[in-house]
Amino acid sequence: MRGSDAADAGAGETSDEFAAVPDAFQRLWTPHRMVYIQDGQQPHPDDCPFCIAPGLSDEKALIVARGTHAYVLLNLFPYNTGHLLVCPYRHVATYDQATPQEVAEIGELTQIAMRVLTQVSNCDGFNLGMNQGRIAGAGIAEHLHQHIVPRWALDSNFFPIIAGTKAIPRLLGDVRREIANGWPGVAGSNADR
Image 1 (cartoon, rainbow, N blue to C red):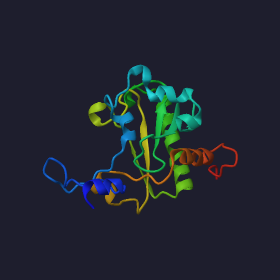
Image 2: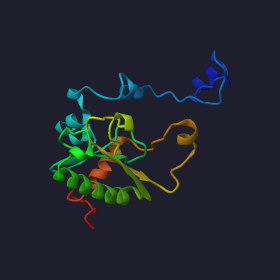
Image 3: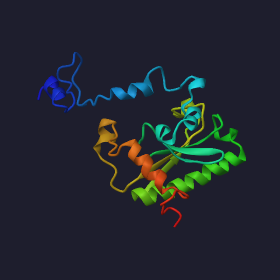
């Protein structure tokens, strides 16, 4: 298929009709990500999504659990299905600015999240991490958040490696509901066992 025919068929776009030198890359167009990349990734301080989220419904904010000093929500731009973030309610930028109570609850919520994700998704491992500061890759540098990324033995394929694209097989709302229902203390949950 030629470039325009391939794009019309939903197969992507080849570079053979570009004005520049053709390359071996296919393009997957994701216009919905403009919300994330437009005007840089850092929101205005009054628009911090991690400060706004607790004031919304759990469903709208993708929150799966709330603690006293921190809460857990799904990443809107996940690396994998079930990619969670643990955030303090307080607007602090780095881990060293967190109070001992915030640090303890972030740790406790991380442990619970790992147990729940293992139970509801049968994941084989996790990547945990905090990007501190814009230069270190923090998508929202002004509000501390820890990533919990579930991993499976067979979750690697060519998309992330060759295409720089991650396929997420489940809808965020469905994943949020499943994790929230599996959280300890939720009626009907088996997570306490």
